[in-house]
Length: 296
Image 1 (cartoon, helix red, strand yellow):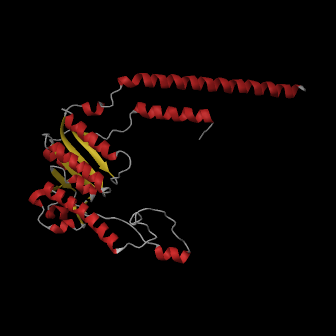
Image 2: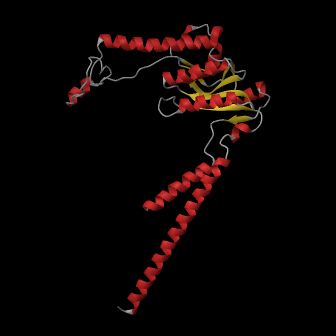
Image 3: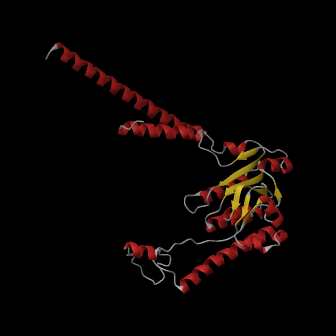
């Protein structure tokens, strides 16, 4: 073995040792940091934002109201937390939603309506860009419903979407091979045409849900709504919605805070992950990447 080859071998071994020491050092520091974070968690209050003195709780309800995940549970939990917080004086439901699941929307509506019977706190439902369908369903539960003049409000209706591609499938030589029991189990199969009885059944189904939607809105809004055209599924601007009785006044969260809440401290209850939570997620992610050799 010549001198140069020996030197290269020694340098390579030294570099390997350095890399090994660096990895061990990083691993030990990461484990130590994780330990310190876990140790400090009991002393970090996740409810700190709710204990900032007298305030108005702002609960954001954004996007499509979906049965997936736990958005309904989170919303109800936040409302309950605000109601039970002695420092919370008022509650704002800040809504920007085109609707979604009829069931989830009704669950939130019913829960707010139930809570209002035993709470002396005023619920302000403020529609931002959109408060339509299920979004309006929830908004109607408020003691006062407010929207901007250009907000989209209404769409009190129910839809059940389905398509039929039977003729197209035949042209392409595609056949359905769905196996089912019960002659109506595949009622919404896109490869089959609805029978008369099936269509009547589905019409009754959406009508029943729509009737319940209408009754809840009438109960919530009382005599403010005098024109039944608001229940056809159409939607309006906030200015038009005011004339139809769907909302109580035109304004924004800032207008309402100044007019009714004496410029209250607005506290958003939909909390973002804390610095420690973000740091922990980052450390765990980076540590896992090191272990499996992934880098970016």
